[in-house]
Image (cartoon, rainbow, N blue to C red; front, top):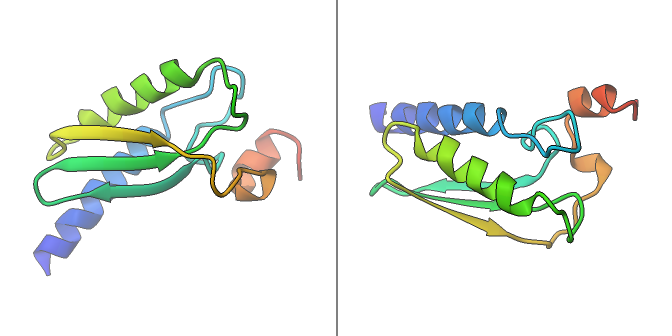
Length: 107
């Protein structure tokens, strides 16, 4: 039971860190934008994140990926981080949290 709780709290920490990462052109964090498709932390501390971008040719991709890698890598128990940029499924506005949609004036 405690292992599961420990895993959940690590995932919450990872999500908390992802909420501090922003696309420089959008005033909403990448997690609430719906750009994070999966977070997978194995028992050896290897974190794998699948994420997308709002546009395939996003000029800030390197900056965003490095920010994700640094911030999630600082979470206790995370030893290594791989960030995979994926474009399936294609991102659209419906993947944003309500807060993000409100912030960007879509609601």
